[in-house]
Amino acid sequence: MAAAPIESAAQAKPLFAEVVQWAAHVGMRFHGMPLQVRLRRSAPSRPGHLGVTIHQRLWRGRKLVRNRIRAMEIVQGLEPLRFQGVVAHELGHVWLAVHRIWLPTTIEEGFCELLAWCFYRDLGTDEARRYAQEIEANPDPVYGGGFQYVRQALPPSELERCLKERNVPLRLRYPRIQTAG
Image (cartoon, rainbow, N blue to C red):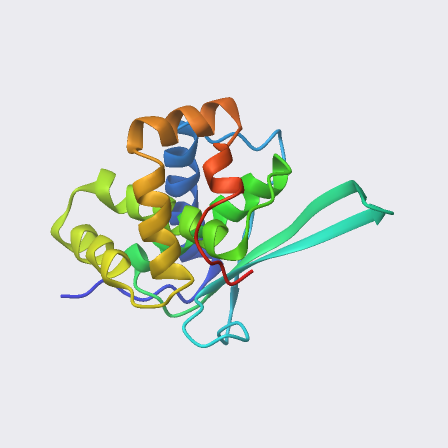
């Protein structure tokens, strides 16, 4: 029997907390930024997108003076484990923003997909392995291609060091692949 889809904040809250706890375990720090998730009735503007991180950035000239995460929004109606994978992905965007790490779009999405893939890998269930395989097989050039590049460029041990040191290797900041962003 399939788990009930996530339709309410009450259902989402404990699942969200589990992913935040996992993120802390792998070394992700958010400097006290309040983390919250909201459910949205419809998908974000791009087809296939199941979540979005909403930023508020204040620039003075070329200098970023404030970078605030307004919310993470996840499409309601997802199966619980899919919901958690989307949360892990969106936490990647939050982590990058908190640490003021700017990456080309393909690399940023690949980095976030790698986090979702690691979350599924760490769970180790059959269902989680299926979701991880979907990430591996994604033909989308931004999400799937970015994931393949980042996964090759950033082995798991280096990912944990990257998260703990709050820095990404230069090969991700300045990749030698054609990026979409």
